[in-house]
Image 1 (tube, rainbow, N blue to C red):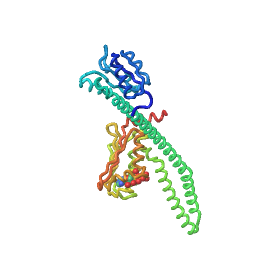
Image 2 (cartoon, helix red, strand yellow):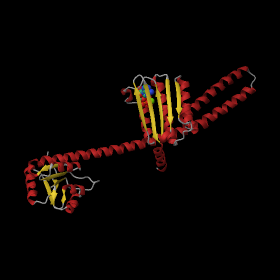
Image 3 (cartoon, rainbow, N blue to C red):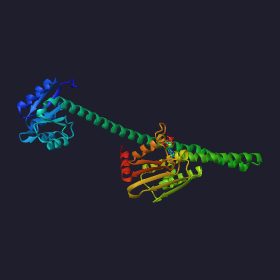
Image 4 (cartoon, rainbow, N blue to C red):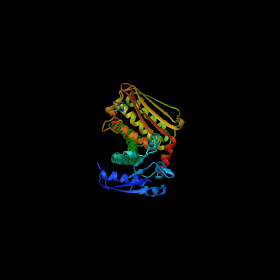
Length: 367
Ligand SMILES: Nc1ncnc2c1ncn2[C@@H]1O[C@H](COP(=O)(O)OP(=O)(O)OP(=O)(O)O)[C@@H](O)[C@H]1O
Ligand SMILES: [Mg+2]
């Protein structure tokens, strides 16, 4: 299909005759166009740099330079227009070499009947490539924004959780502890056995409520992380084992793992979600957790010997646990791998290059 707007053509050609032949061919094909002819490299560079050129037609051999020199004179970063070699015989090797440098197409001057087709094809390829590059750039930008938003939301969520944990500690925890002291006082000063029985029952309820508020606080803000990542994961693992009865083995190359706070929190949340998934879905009898900070990487693998995850389960629309872990790992410069074998178990591995995490944490501080 012919373009509706007139085409701006730049013709690099030292022969007036050949130029006129090209014009006649374009007229015959019904092209609406304007064409400028240049013969020198400097005149070519000036005109080619203007945004208005839709397509360049170039003879191969010109006085003192070749079309490849002209191609290389175009700005590398700029949006080079389609560049078609329109020349006498230059040999197949030279034509292939020229096209490998990025020149769009080659047409022999004796084959001018093909000019319309070659120009339209080059313009179409160029537009498609342009649209794809723009779509790729837009996609990369939107992925970057999404990842920044995820990072921001996670920080906000963690901050909010810490604030709620503080309130539970100060208000609820404080009041429960005070009520427990009062109950103990009442019990010491009462002689009625009925009062004793009631205060004892009330003290037990209070103890239960204190335990629950501590558990809730721990889930909201893992203060255990203050004792280091190993201690925190050990605490998660032993609670998990107690709660589920699934044997849980923790191994690490060091008990003194102290990567960036953001890495520790991400690793802790990863272990928490992976263990929650194991208890909900794996139907397994054994879990292994391996942590290492060797060779500049923090790696943590949580594997079970359960039923595994099917492809459909992995793509469930309303499941955000594993997806969230992928995004979370990215915000600290790491990544998550989930490998699973049907009937033989699942393994979730977090890997974080420690230097990248340090950089990400510094950048976040200065934002
Ligand atoms: N260890 C596992 N063993 C077997 N299946 C698993 C395991 N972990 C996850 N799955 C399957 O993968 C699905 C996706 O897990 P994911 O954690 O992303 O979402 P979810 O647990 O269903 O929901 P959410 O975490 O958002 O509350 C689960 O619904 C489950 O079917
Ligand atoms: Mg889950």
